[in-house]
Image 1 (tube, rainbow, N blue to C red):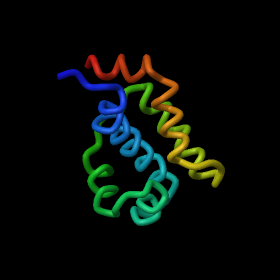
Image 2 (cartoon, one colour):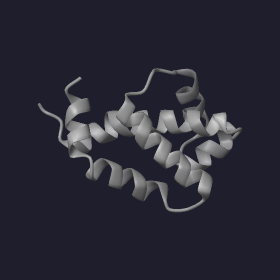
Image 3 (spheres, helix red, strand yellow):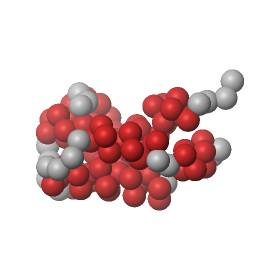
Image 4 (cartoon, rainbow, N blue to C red):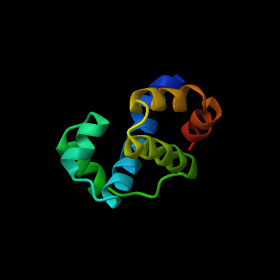
Length: 99
């Protein structure tokens, strides 16, 4: 059964973006609890993301950087940014799902 782009985003792309975003916020000195609150995750999930560090694909790193900047600036909603990223990047999702 093939994944629909939204299924792929939920199972693979969004966790990768969250992982990379958590790493970026941690580098800015944010605590795991503060990162968890900003991303709507548990502290345990953030801890897992920060300990399971893999090199992010350039496209994922770019999206995570944009999300982290929105969070750091206090402007915009992360949920809308993630939805816009996934919905507006069909080619990205297709390219990553073939890996």
